Length: 407
Image (cartoon, rainbow, N blue to C red):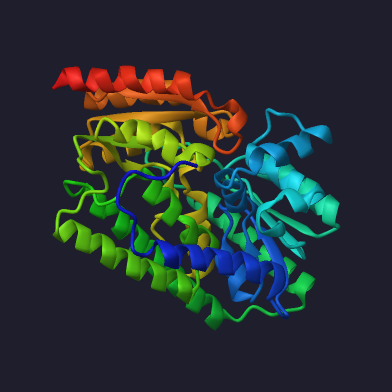
């Protein structure tokens, strides 16, 4: 991962310490706390309220990609019969389960329970089934109905259906861990989760400023706590500090880039294994990714009043990837207009079919509605073997020359 060509955030050391402490605590220092493997779309607030220690194999997969370990781990999984067409996060996880010595930080700790949810993709369901068999650990699967409505709102019976499952999830975890959920603790965790999500949303919104105080790699890296530590005081404290620093940059017109000439929108997961090298190709043209669809997945609004179980059911059913292409296109149009972008780039991600399916249709709709050109790049979010830098650089050059010609 090449170095960035722009100013580093002052909170970067705090972020590094926070994440390393989390993973080391999960592996070595979690006295009395059962380990729960949790998918990124699952209601972690319930897990934390029961005083379990959640870890996210997907987030760990991003870490493997960023640290250059994914290719070897994927090969371990493929040698055991797993297809190269599967998600690289899943293959990295299987590789880590079978050869932890090749994994960063010695791999993830053995789970006592696993929680997965179908609101982001179908792969996590089979992935967690494989992990449950490997470790002999109990698994709970939360089913969230796909939202077909053009307004992106789940139906009342869909919310009720998920709410019943959340009650079942609580009963499952109470039985497996011999713990009792305290409603007061759940309210406390929810308050922290809501505050962190609101802070993260405010940080992202500050990138509407000209010049933008952050570029895509800043957003990708700083989303980690909202995934791994949502519902904790440490997460809130980090985002308060980040918000203050970003607000200071906005006040003093400090740009993320040496010079911002173009503003872009990114769609799909980051290319973790070439994070700075890839985006530096755009920095060379003064192009800053001021907003993206990916990190917004954890800036979802959460109900602050009413029944907490119903609120969680609504929140986790409405995630970005559980919506129709019409809603996803509508959201991209909204981002393109509010952040005043000159164009957008879509990552056709070999590893994430649900995110990548329909991108050509979405590109057409967004361009027709906004007049902004879109580029589609083919790569993989974690497996570097699917990355062709020369071909990608040539496509970026053509796209940026097109933007330059538009004036």
